[in-house]
Amino acid sequence: MTIDCELEQDRWVVRLRGELDVSSSALLFDAAMMGRELPSVAEVVIDFARVTFVDPSGLHALVTVHIALNGAGRPLRIEGASSQVSELLHLTGLAELFKIPSDELGSVTDRDAATDHIELSRGDV
Image 1 (tube, helix red, strand yellow):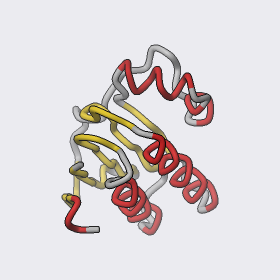
Image 2 (image 1 turned 120 degrees about the horizontal axis):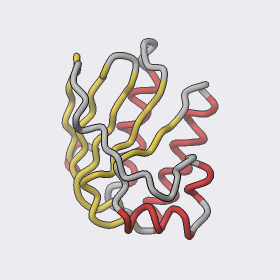
Image 3 (image 1 turned 135 degrees about the vertical axis):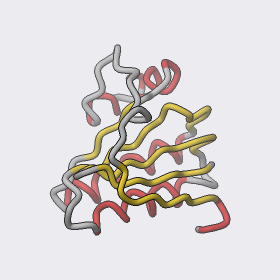
Image 4 (image 1 turned 45 degrees about the horizontal axis):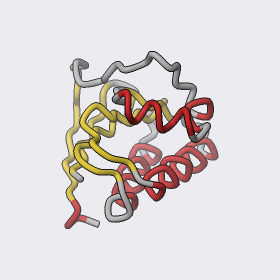
């Protein structure tokens, strides 16, 4: 898993590439929490456009991130989910938690105005 993080105006965007599994869940959590610490961030967005696989530990990481951000008053948005990831979130009931409509497949990859950029990989955890 590779994760790119960018501050886009008041959004901390976490772009995932690869498999969200037991070996990458902590990396996702750390990347999302960086956005929680920035005072200018109004919401954290996780872009799933390039995610190829999600296992139960990946789902657990999403719930943990949601709880931590919610406690800090920062909403979590999931965007760009493939049909397979979207279906997984719906089957597990997590789509409702993350307010993902069944037809939402958009991505944040087209946004510009990035002011900061950080790339993390598995060795950074």
